[in-house]
Image (spheres, one colour):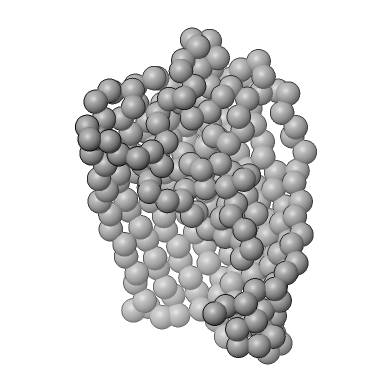
Length: 241
């Protein structure tokens, strides 16, 4: 279950196919959707990788805000050491939230989520976002709440622990929270504010809350992980050239 970021060798052939849709003829309702499939064939079955990714968002544009409901689904791993069922990728950047994932105006989110989760792989998620809230000129807010659950079979972690599989081909260890199984979930809430001081300069405040709930029955080590919620406050300035 090699990383989607691995470089293709002479005997490897990665490829992708996808469809992107935007429907805005029902204005102020806008529907956006993506469907993608990717495959990475190698000379060994255990290193092959193939999977699906789908997302759907429905926006309703209003005078002072734009509510959005979104859904994401991507295939996760099964419980066998027979190759990966997550879609390969060239670069990550999953941006529905600004704390656990990669939507922050300041920094990448993969330090929390890990590369594959940061690419939106191995999970399904349902969220509500209120964008472009503005009651004062040049001052906007964004509120997001999202629930996500893993799509990786929980037997994967148990099998790694019990059968001593090669962890380099599994992309996790038995105590690594950055792969969510179908028994793991997380909740994230974000509230962000942006003040456009000048045309190119903005002051930004990001507030976030994440609670990850990990099952402790896949291995002997998972129950040792901290289960406290994480909080975030980031304040800074952004200058766009």
